[in-house]
Length: 117
Image (cartoon, rainbow, N blue to C red; front, side, top):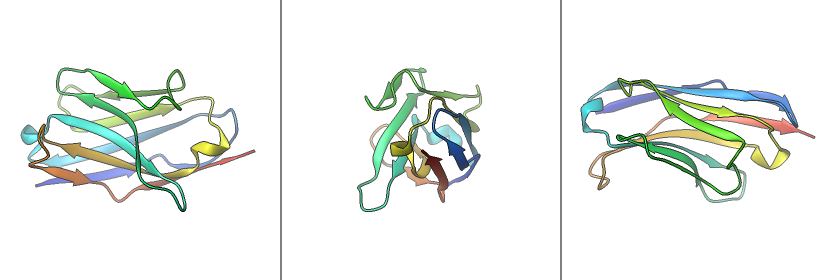
């Protein structure tokens, strides 16, 4: 079992920055991929960024060049640095830890990010 707790969300003006953190505890050794997803009102949850055990990163086209995903060496903390924020980035952001074939798939409780125009 893995427990995930996000922090760092809040209200920011367009063009501003926020850094999200996700603290993980438990059986982290089972985890191969860590990621951030977001869900805006009335929309499906979507992948924002992911990082693999081998530090391969993947970003949604809408955030490339603005967001950066990173983690500490122990995989116990995942980060998402968000720069040049836009109103369309407003959503609840969720941390996700999973094994390669989704045998294990864990979610945090989410943190609200609101970008005002």
